[in-house]
Amino acid sequence: MPIASASSAEAPRARWRPCSSIGDGGEAVVELAVSLPVNGMPLTETVPFVRSCAERGYTAAWASEVAGPDFATLLGQVAGQVDVDLGVAVAPMQTRAPWLLAATASSLSHLSGGRFSLGVGTSSEVIVEQWSGLPFDHPLARLRETVEVLRQLLSGERVSHDGEYLRIQRYRLFAPPPAPVPIFVGALNPASLRQAGELGDGVCLNQCGVAHLEDILSEVATGAEKAGRDPAGLSVMARLFCWVTDDVPAARNEVRRSFAPYAATRVYNRFFRWLGFTDEMDALLAALSQGDRAGAAGALSDEFIDTLYAVGDADHVAGRVQAYVDAGITIPAIACIGTGRAESERTLHTIAAALT
Image (tube, rainbow, N blue to C red):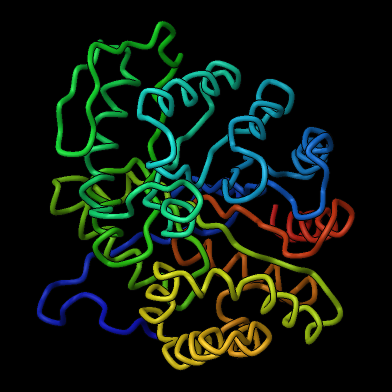
């Protein structure tokens, strides 16, 4: 499905490089990652769970931070215990002061032997306004300033900054990270994708289809090239929601129930419209306006689900993951839709067996 209103027709489209296969390197190094946390799995099982994934070919673990464990606690357990790279996608930039975010990143870098990547993003009005009581305004300008300040802080220099949104006086990390911390930028619209290409060491994507990646990555490449950067030097992390199952209709219904709340937020509703799902978004909001949560979930069509999520038998799911890699994803982070460790390990191990 083509993206609606992508880059202007008269502007030359920036090109992205393909990847050949997971673990192969090809024209870009590819890391197969597991996404944390796992729905229904106790926090105490995180280390053995990640270890079981590493034994089957996973080389990284990337945490999200929504209503589950905070990313620092989640990844701090794994750091130094399992031989994998670590990352967060994404830490909301507004909910921690920059010095605290830099200190957390530095701590995780030390614990992991310099193998931590920091993903930051503008988050959503739910997390920022409703949960944190903070303003959700000027997100791209705030993000630009945050990334600039984070780079200064992580360098170990003493930082004083009096900006439009951030103010810091004479802060310096006592223990700067042992290696440079790559900063990834989360992006959900053309402007933020271009900004990610301009500012980030990588971009974090979420809930997009393979067919959308040409347009999405073209925006990232355009931002990089306008800043005089080589797009081929950027990493592309994408959280891929997967479920190896024999009951696809039941799985689709679970996806509807689980992901309708995402589509109800302003940032994701606009994002899914940009991807071409205007009818689904209109129907979902109409149902919610009547207090009909079941109707809102039902508004997500089979096409919506089959495009954005990999649900089906082993061959289908593994093929979808490989298709993302072929389209330019360098860090496919597998997020399991099913519940609990056993079901998640089935999906993760099946993908690894097929692709590594």
